[in-house]
Amino acid sequence: MKRLTVVLAACAFALSANPSRAAGPPSQALSFVAEQGSPISTAAPTSTPGVASQQAPQKITAYTLAPDRYQKARELSRIHFRFRIISFMYGLVVLWLILRWKLAPKYRDWAERSSLRRALQAMVFSPLLILTMGVLELPTGIYQNWVSQKYGISVQGWRSWSLDWGKQELVSVIVGTIFIMILYAVIRSSPRRWWFYFWLVALPIGLALFFLRPLVIDPLFHKFEPLQRKDPALTASLERMVQRAGQTIPPERMFWMRASEKTTAIEAYVTGFGASKRIVVYDTTIARATTLEIVFAAAHEMGHYVLGHIPKFVAFGAALLFVLFYLGFRTIGWVLARWRAKWEVRGLDDWASLPALLLLFSILSFLATPIVNAYSRHIEHQADQYGLEVTHGLTPDSSQVAAQLFGLYGDVNLSDPEPNSVDVFLFYDHPPVPDRVQFALTYDPWSHGRSGQFVK
Image (cartoon, rainbow, N blue to C red):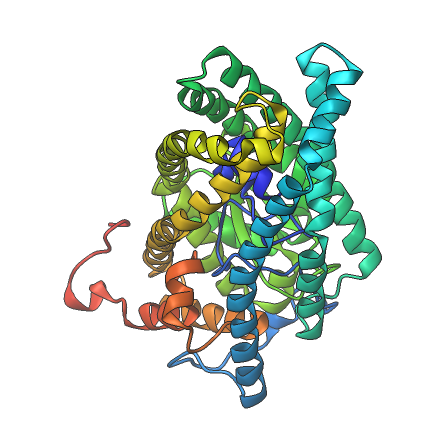
């Protein structure tokens, strides 16, 4: 999804929106491997599942890469860092151009001429603005996929990529139109407290989207099948791990995802809640990782559920959005008082004020990014720790298994062995791979006669 959905849906946690990804597979709620908001749509090898499981991985003592892979990882890391800054600035330029060219007032006039009913006006105005933003931001998406292809992470053809982009725009139009309609209804009914009431209304709708995403949105981009059907032996191993943890995650909640049509990346993630809650494993992960490594990845994902990370992250996101909405309310009046005549915006309750709101909230959201990512790194570290604890005694040398998986992930996804500290602070939503490998190799409370923190 795009910046518009992040701001108006008030549920970035529900849609896992990523403004730096114009097209490609939907991003996940809490993932095992995503270490930065990847600006690349990705794709995968055609190796036969299970082949990697037959190979004995080398013992890992630290995260290292072969010289050629090291150079590529360093180059790609620098590209990613620069791109995130540039894409943010470019997004602001797009919104500024829409304001300067007075496109929103034109769309508003068309909408008002089409009907006197606000709901119908929203159905005219919103798609026009959303698609204009999508087209203007298309160069960043094209560049993302080109870089991904160049570095061997994406194998998705441009026809498939374009189809995904179109699907994503369609979803953005549907979701965005709903929230734009609600936003301006609230603004007109309560000019002083609209930010609070919109926050209250948006949250339950965001949770509904979070619930529906794995059932409705994700299948638009990838094929999902029960993991038990694709790999019964792996499913049995995962069930033993779940029983060891004293949890209940039936095989019906474990899914195989065909990522290999689009990415070489390996991934596992959790998403949804209630009846839509599930653990998803990429087919690329099954093809490249051993069974023990996949069990650890699933243990990490289960840690998110056991430790309550999803409701905690939702609560954290809701609190942060409350603050951002309030700051936006306190600032938008000054912005419109200064520039609304130049932009031909009548006032905050005018449809044409939306680009100004988006511009303001984009800046506020970017400033809040380090806070969100710091919290995300914290809970991902906890999930790593839980995975080590729950697999201790269940698999031989669980620390080495975890380190091997982190190393495999870093090699396949070209993770930087020496990440820029500023990049980590601003954009990493997972601990850097070198830190995860080191933690896996050194975390050992049992040798000192203690038990784990989360699994006694």
